[in-house]
Image 1 (cartoon, rainbow, N blue to C red):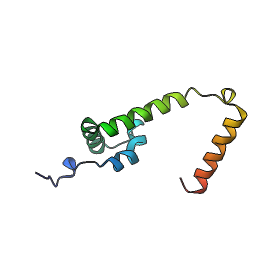
Image 2 (cartoon, rainbow, N blue to C red):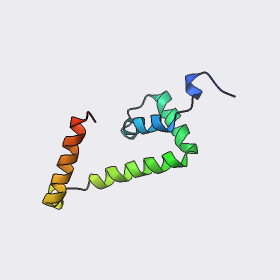
Image 3 (cartoon, rainbow, N blue to C red):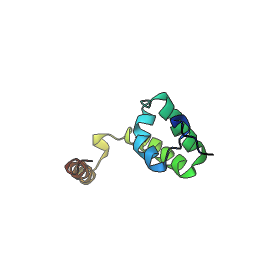
Length: 88
């Protein structure tokens, strides 16, 4: 049975990926937050993605400029510059 009410519309995996930052920051409106959580209850792929994002945030929060080698710093800066140039 397909519901037409937006409260019951399924969130796609692609939509979840696009919303994950807002979800982790607590910035999703209530209805969208509920749809997000309903999706991850049943989607093991998105559960894994969410866990990876949380781990990435935790680990990157532990990085310091002093802990990076000059080569790693250059690589990261080049990646961010490339991301900005492509409109990332």
